[in-house]
Amino acid sequence: MTDRTAPTAHPISAIMAERWSPRAFDEARAVSEAELASLLEAARWAASCFNEQPWVFCVARRDANPAEFATLLSCLSENNQGWATRAGALVFGLARQSFAANGNANVMANYDLGQAVAQLALQATAMGLVTHQMRGFDVEKSRVALNVPAGTEPMVAIAIGHRAEASILPEALAAREVAPRARKPPAEFVRLGGF
Ligand SMILES: Cc1cc2nc3c(=O)[nH]c(=O)nc-3n(C[C@H](O)[C@H](O)[C@H](O)COP(=O)(O)O)c2cc1C
Image 1 (cartoon, rainbow, N blue to C red):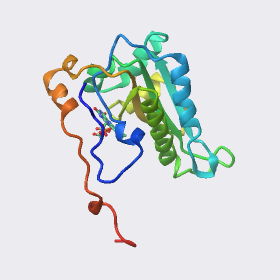
Image 2: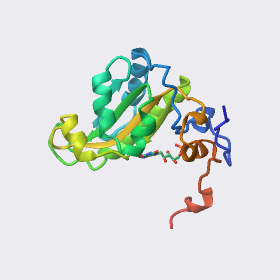
Image 3: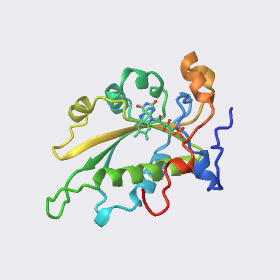
Image 4: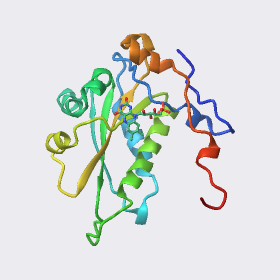
């Protein structure tokens, strides 16, 4: 399979260079309960503002929880459903928008969820799994389907599984699967001392 390691401008840990977001998932390979538990454990140990840990994860493994998997899948956009249906597991990441102790707004909640998801994704890479985050889902539909309480925001869906050959995808998506990986150069986002 095509090497997707990032062509970094400076050395970084392999695990970060090797994380990427494929759409070709191997339908024949499941994500085990233990694997999913490790991914959620990685998320659990993320830093968060006041150690609030505002994240909530709604999870389903395709083989073990087909009904729940179908529910999560149904919330995705049609495009994302097309390939995410072959993932071994789907996870929705949500963030509670206020502090449990005093009800004050937690403006860092979504930021903290993002850090937890980043840790989940890197843990997956370390375990030979792949992840693909998605905002392409119907937020209102997910609120109903996942029975999300008021004050908690569905932010992201994550497909998790094992990588497959790009050739299993329709042509346009297969091409994206092997296209060069690109990022802005550091000079575009690093400012010495400020703007
Ligand atoms: C919050 C977020 C939302 C995303 N939403 C989608 C999506 O709905 N569909 C999709 O195919 N990719 C989605 N992506 C994947 C990005 O396009 C991908 O991460 C980006 O192109 C960088 O590629 P890489 O992850 O392989 O390095 C999303 C990524 C993030 C972090």
